Image 1 (tube, rainbow, N blue to C red):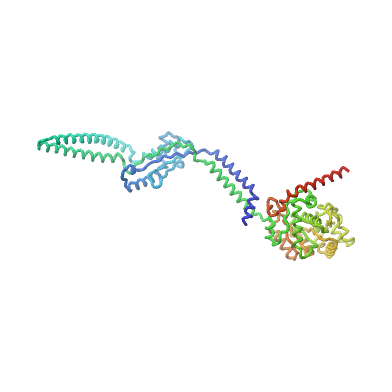
Image 2: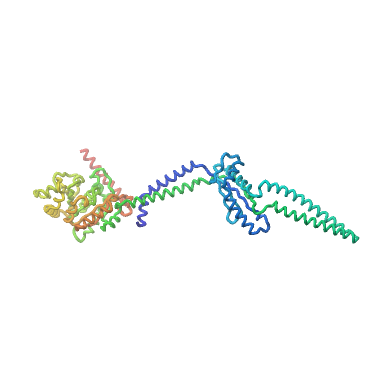
Length: 538
């Protein structure tokens, strides 16, 4: 498919895309309104105390990161969740699917997140799970806590002793400065030395105990407690609606292209021409009307765009036979109900309007309708002329309401139409009709249904193949063309009938002439209505 064809498919099925997008969007919006709102709260922990040291080692930082990974896997474990439920007095254990933990890349930070329909409960659970995790660390066991309390007391006692010892050293130093005798100086120096040794011992013990209190690498603290979330993280209404709309659009376009792919009917003149190798001589829009006479649009509405399309068809036929004068023309179609008879009738009208003496012959001896189109009697016609040489065939030709246009109806329907059309008498009738008209147009049955069209095709100067846009199948129009070519029928081209103006209006300029002709057309209609009213009064 060309890019133009893709746009054509989208233009044709735009309503399906709009409907799918609207349905998907509204459905997703209503669905999200029924869904509970989910809130997320996050508590941040620090593993280790490397940042609190002036010169942390890379080994301590590495070990802290590894420990953080381990604690992240413990968050969803049953003991942690059960402990949080007991501490908060919950009647249920939080689901592990609603709890997550991650280590901030390249750091010692551990984030614990909790999802819940209640924002306050989400906050409390996040903080409590963090506390339960801290309780699993060796620095938070009861024994360690008692030991830490004892060490704290010892540190306080050592601080007092260090201060007292420093004061004693200062006092002995003053005495040393004031001493005059060698004996006193030696005594004070000995006292100062002893006090300094004592102070050094206190300080060493204090430093050792302080390290115990401060903890080591396997130490977890809360850096940032969870805050109460104000907006839900799920459902994301706008994102959900946009995603549903996108899916609806994709499904609609996919369905449209699938339908077009599976649809093997001929839709445009270009497509038909490409399939058959025949030139597209005309493109006729769908004619609205309840009766057959309503479809004779070239007579009822001669200034309408569709009538103009038939004139374009007439001109194209004349140009295609400029080297060889066209005296006889056959109109057929691959299958029934494709509009060949309506095409022939309107084409005969525009040919007659151009000043040609035209005889339309209904050679569809199985389902004749030309007499209904032109509202003439069908008591006698072609079949009677073939079976009875007298009177001559021109005695059966009837005038129509259209100037320069006559009709030879089918007459009595025979049991053997193909034999009659292939008879010697039929050849004589064709020659007699040609002698009395500028153009003779034959309406035949479908080419693939019976052999009537094939029998008559070799006796005419040109054959016109009519396709119904959107109904004629590609294989049928190809087979009909191949069958006519096999018998060396003089194919002029094809006509695409019943085109939708929305489907291919850009192909045919005549559909844009409506505004130009509308005023004059309406004037003609008013004149006709006045004449009709006068006739009724009389």
